[in-house]
Length: 135
Length: 135
DNA sequence: ATAAACTCTATAACAACTATAGAGTCAATC
DNA sequence: GATTGACTCTATAGTTGTTATAGAGTTTAT
View (tube, rainbow over the protein chains, first blue to last red):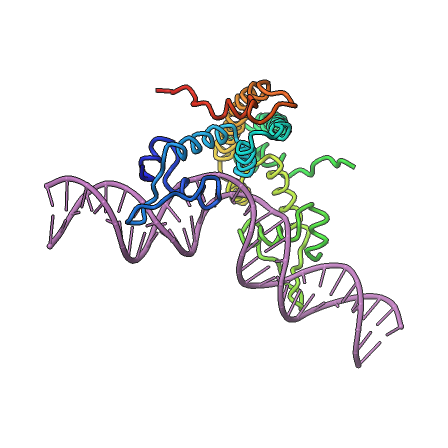
């Protein structure tokens, strides 16, 4: 299988697959006589694994760790669990942040209706106001 | 005021302030004899405005637009409102995404407890399984 | 023989910073 | 007057995960 076919099967772009090779997320592919990369089923499997992880927003670094663990099947999987827990924490923290942000944005948005001039724009006026100090 | 003082007052790092100058979010600062940047109150105000915007996750590009609008006080502020609406939409879409992600992560996390070997790890096994096709 | 479609490498761009190196400036102390 | 320390300057590279580009080579079909 050449890289274009692998791209179609996995949904990764051709450049992304080459990028993953450079970043050692997948092994360097064998080459054809004309120096084209050649892939087998195992490589495709690994890319699909990576695809799954990326869809969960795991970083390439985290995926590298998972792949390494996957290669040492006797190891305890506490490490996997710790990583997942940390990742879940991060996602939840980000949701909290964005939820708070959303409230502020909606509040700010209420302070202006259309057909006003910028001079009277509540949004801009609020953004210019010095925020309450947190000391 | 030299850049270090402005950094303390605004909470931006020194490099970030210089970065904003290069990106034309603030005007090029006057220089002292020894070529140090010198800032006045107006510059600090503008940086605080930018700080407010950044705390709302507005992009530098969006902030540039707001600053431009702020400079033409006679203009209608429909543009400001449109931008805010679009931004709010984006934030809400991201919250939705992350919420869905969080459910999936928690589900996955349940599939493994500690003290198993990686071979039996439910997380890794689930990640390796071919996902249901969406065709 | 040639064209179309593919692949190769290397490099730059994106966003919004952060970090580093190497040099210059300024104020205070010995 | 020389030196020290704290500050500042510019220019450049690194971060993350791609995407885009240029210029060249390969393969397949006509």
